[in-house]
Image (cartoon, rainbow, N blue to C red; front, side, top):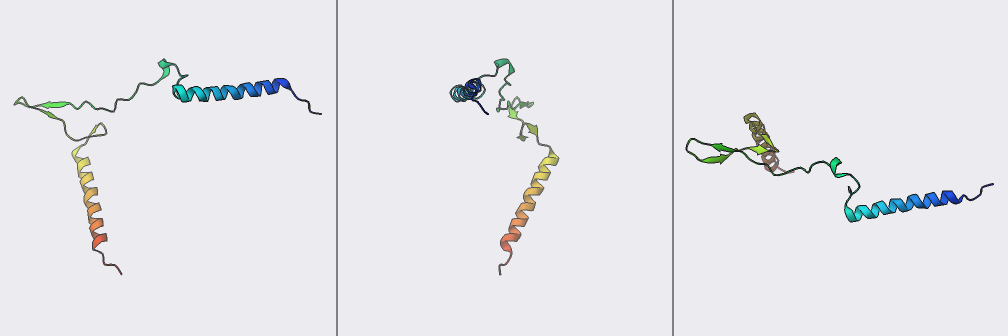
Length: 100
């Protein structure tokens, strides 16, 4: 025959309350409040320091064609232009196609 076990009820309630306490603290202090600061990753800097080109005339100019922190090469620009032109060609074909 089954008998009630008070220690099981005590531990079940204790674990449930601990979970509720952690959820409450996460809502108040942030989701990573219990992770030590030395283990947290450094925040990512989304602002790129664009280097400047120094011309012989003394003028400074930003380095052009930055995309996702990678320099866009001439071949990549050609690929983008090809895709752009191909898309325009398809759109013109769809627009000029007779319906019916």
